[in-house]
Image 1 (tube, helix red, strand yellow):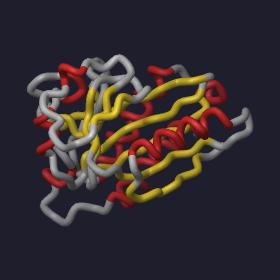
Image 2 (cartoon, one colour):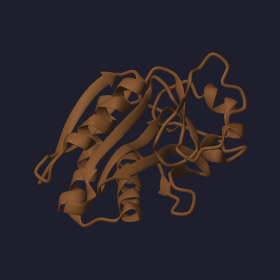
Image 3 (cartoon, rainbow, N blue to C red):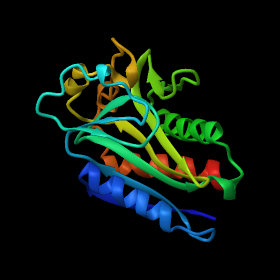
Length: 204
């Protein structure tokens, strides 16, 4: 079993969400797993049990109530979003173990760039020196995962100040660009690194 990687470019959030749900509803026991790598135009998304008080000032950025886990986050150009369409039953993998697998794949990819990232198993996500660089939010339906992760690469971080990121007031966000003296790799290049690390962990 392998992971089919789909680089999709810039995609409207609602369009991608609808496509993920349709894929998950239509898949069978033989459907290959897929990882969609993309960017979104500016949008705030609120998880299924998310609290609107964590949205401080959405302003002109749309707010979408979605069906993933977690609280509120921001997506925008320059952020690598990865949607993990994975059959967890087939892999005999529980939700928590899967989340930790995705976190570890992100950490490995960041380590290849010399960024000392760590996974926080209590406040899920990936952090560098206490600042959050990657967020996770998943939905499991009929044993299959969708939604996934967002990794800040080279983007405008200002909109994060309009929310309590992931429900945590005062949480400081960071990005790959802030830790590199040389040019920042493209989203495509970093996406390949994450995909490779994730594939090795899931199908070894």
